[in-house]
View (spheres, one colour):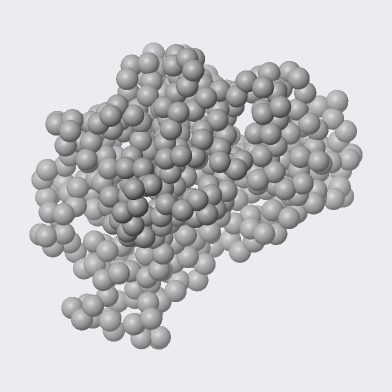
Length: 224
Length: 224
């Protein structure tokens, strides 16, 4: 998608191999929702960039992240803090004739914007439910809900999805041409995916206790 | 490791759950080497943080990354650019009684420092070989080496490993205690790993062409 649509924020436009850029929310949301962790960049008190892994959950037009380092910088920044958030799903290793053309199949998203701390318990609960339910649907009802103290000790930031782009590489190596001997060297793709093993019960629970439906469902849907 | 060793740079010290922090190079290097992609944060010309996915390769005490957005900012910065780099490996979903105690088992690394552009072709070749060989040992010898033009069009940055920390969570959910009914709700860990499927040949190569040893080895070592 090489659209020069003026609605695409310049700050997240894909410059390198622009045809891999996507700017529609359907594509962006699907990648955000499929990613277990994200990486969040902030600028620290010394004016230096810092990126750390985090958990995220999208609810409609907002991405929630947990506090930690971002929240330290948030206190410094007052009302809101400029952040950038990225997620990347690895789909394959791309194996080419030329070393230069080896690549990775991936789906990534970059978000930028001002994140604000969530103050109300109601919105915190929405975020916490999303953190759990987007990965393990049903777990919210199975497990013990957060109490007042847990809510209080949880810092959640809210980032509106306004500056957003996706970048996607799919398919075979790109430069198989007549200069390359197609009969000698194997080229193609090794598909990769995040796959679940068998759930391991806590040693303190009965050996015959049934695996929770939410856990069973995730493990089955992430089978090889 | 909660050491207060003065050799640990404050800029990468793990503050939240400090016992998950590790500062030894053996631990840090193993996580860097096992990660396929990294996320690199820079500060753009507008003074805003930006994080984008990238590829990296460690060679001794240096991490090389590909150019792209960082190199745009590098041109602005002249001799070197302050960056932060993070990698995260996901090892499991941690399933607890209390929603608050659900977590993820992971191994992550955060690096910070000044990245400089690699100028010499010799060092570029070292970096390019490491990009390939650290993931697919043997591919460098199997495939066609970079030519002058490819080397010229490749921008590589060098980040010395000086400010570095790892953060690791392993094992079971932490808060199984007498208040939680151990006989009713399944708790434990769903292990996850990046797993390879069967290599898919390019449609233009002979159907009976043997999969390259480097490809076969990676696929086999990333089996379920």
